[in-house]
Amino acid sequence: MNHPDSLLTGQLARDRIEHIRISSVFLPLAAPISDAKVLTGRQRPMTEIAILFVEISTADGHRGLGFSYSKRAGGPGQFAHAKEIAPALIGEDPNNIARLWDKLAWAGASVGRSGLAAQAIGAFDVALWDMKAKRANLSLAKLLGAQRDSVRCYNTSGGFLHTPLDQLLVNTDISRAKGIGGIKLKVGQPDRALDVKRVETVRKHLGDDFPLMVDANQQWDRPTAQRMCRTFEQFNLVWIEEPLDCHDAEGHAALAAQFDTPIATGEMLTSVSEHWEFIRQRGADYLMPDGPRVGGVTPFLRIAALADHAGLMLAPHFAMELHVHLAAAYSREPWVEHFEWLEPLFNEKLDTRDGRMIVPTRPGLGLSLSERVAGWTAQATEITN
Image 1 (cartoon, rainbow, N blue to C red):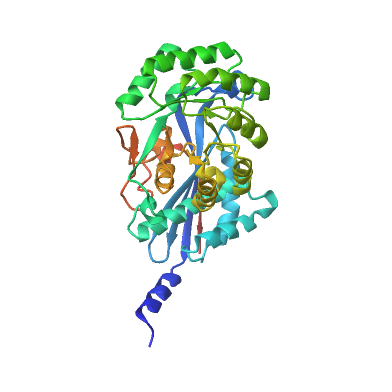
Image 2: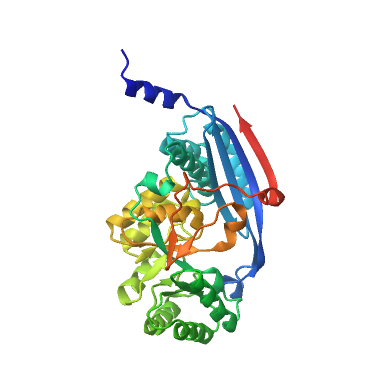
């Protein structure tokens, strides 16, 4: 006679992925966005964000929604890669998420397991985790073993370099009124004196103790980074972000060892191994993995485990709709970046209160696509059994 638990396991194992919808969506921004990479001539202002959505359905009627993204370039490439590898999931058990990540990686192995290839996988991986949490009737945070019901949050969208200084002060007041607990300013422009003036003015406006961060977006060389980190020590910053090239683990480690102000980096890294190099060399006090960029929840959890073992603090980059769940499960008190840019894509919005972002209690990510997404969809495809 079969044990009831064995029967249940067999029933779950019989569920199979039978339908996948992939869509490439271009979300327009309200105004062109400029950071230091624009002012140094390396990039053009950003006017839209390319979103890769993946919707997965199973034979038993379970559904999962996942997404990845790209800025300025890469959206069509992510869609093309996702379209090629998606058939590998048809007929598979959606509960075997780690194995399916590997299967997707091998399906596109000739173009690597990082960068655009990993970002395409990320949308599938997030969808599978969303489905798994929904099936358990738990939020993703609870499924992962949440440490907290809210996470410290800081605003970035109001502090870009295209924003005049007087408006910058207005934006900080708006963020604080919304219950956001920190402000990040973009720096790294060619005239370093302007960076110092903006940080000094905002620090005076906020007071000595309100959490304030700066982000140079990789635009300093090593001598400049040393000088600027030394200058910024006086402003009691939570961190200085990406003072050097995103792959310069040795240089970041030297700054982290030399200065009291913590060093933050990691958002541009696209694999577990790239993050491990920074963890190994202690090239960050705050590690900033980006779930969609590293390939979804599965590799993010591996990075978080390594970071926790090394005693690092965590501050996931962008995509707060996903990262609020992942940060809630980290053992050390993290930060989540508040960007309202993706809000038009979803029917639900995240709440902020008393300096913290409230973790949604709805099953899964707690997200559903808004009607406006259809109007921004450039191409879509469906894969079935």
